[in-house]
Length: 150
Image (cartoon, rainbow, N blue to C red; front, side, top):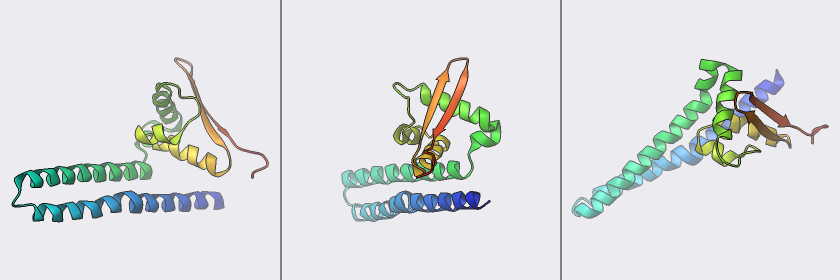
């Protein structure tokens, strides 16, 4: 039970960092861009450029919030169960070229936050995560952890 509580606390800290480092900073930048729009009211070209920046920042903030929501409530798990969710996510990852050991950047870029979280936890204990998949034969998720733990 203590391990579960510890994992939950770590996840809360990670979400708080993500909200602070990404979403909050984007919203601050968005506020500054709106102020710049107000100052550019007399220059239509400048105003159009600033409004485009506002749109891009708002879109980025929306994507960030959606990532946090996915982290809090992984829809794959709820809809399909653990095994089916892992198979689906692993299939997406393995369909990308030259993917053997799971790395964070492609996972984050493609929205595979469950696998990314598993990878982060394995790394926290000095291990790594590997996916093996063959069409029609399923997918195996392997976590390598040092024994005894470091």
